[in-house]
Image (cartoon, rainbow, N blue to C red; front, side, top):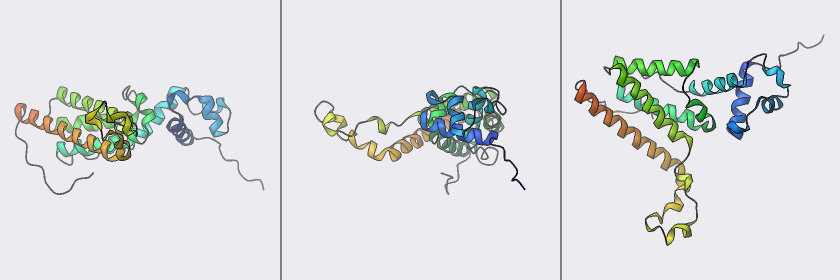
Length: 221
């Protein structure tokens, strides 16, 4: 008895292969022809599952956004929710930096992206932020997180001490930054996020009302 034929393609398989291709070669290296070759099928086969190349990119972008944890909103203080969401958001984007420019266009019709926006906005409004300010906070967080995920500050410095020794006296240790890339970049992000939340906390107390002290025990990140 012949073995039952299995479908060569599924939406999930296409999205996973597209994500891997974009991770490896960037958006400029992505095409439906290249994707079909990676999957071992003819190009038109993809269109049984996705009508256009942009639909595939939308699905990849949404799969990345779907990795972001927004469950904190509505369950913990908005300051902690914002901090934990920020770290989760950055981790998801930093793992797939090549898709970030596409994500930066906004949520469009992508379900996970819209669900994330809804959770963040709703959590902030429920915490007392006026709707306009809640929108601003969501926007500034996207700017901050996407910018941090697009590249590495530390890796931007070459590992050649002679480059800095004579002409740049304040950068004599800059050649070591790349060696400590993860600690530098993650530390900078954490510092910036804390400063951002501290500033928002002062704005809240000046214009909305007092805030309770945050619990000192433990953090999610």
